[in-house]
Image (tube, rainbow, N blue to C red; front, side):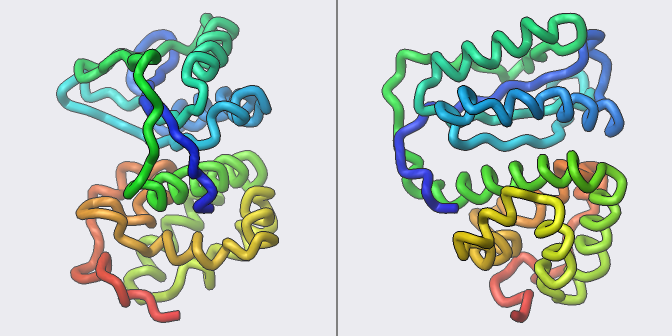
Length: 231
């Protein structure tokens, strides 16, 4: 999980269906499903070793929902070409939405190391790929229910996430099974209850892509601090 050691260019893009109306959750998951073949494409993964997805709404724009993808590329021009080809092949239904805060990436810039954010980006990347497996193989509604139950019932009771989630993750995610085979599963579960920065709490990045509206409800006092979960 901490194998991301090369230099990268990172940028984000935001997508909707072509009518540009807000993405409700049903359409959001349909849009993710359309991106799955690109994510699994070896040409894409060879030059884009890390990426993550989430649901976003921003009142600075039109306060409509969108799918946001942040890419970490070792060959940004190639990654962008693959994305553009994908969008061209789906031009009838998918468009990139340009937020007011959007800045076009400068593909001539030198690549940079992740340095202090390496652990966080590594977690986001592997977490996203596990989510994508589970959405495809376990299903949207069962996965939402599973994560909601952990987030609002078991986590406040200080139950470790692996006690509830691991059997389903092992059965339905090839990425998780590979992680376990490499003895990196323990690090994933620890990262899921780790605070990477002031606001960057691991569990949020499992819950937000699946149940974004519930994440506004906050977490129990002191639960984001080290030691909340006893293993």
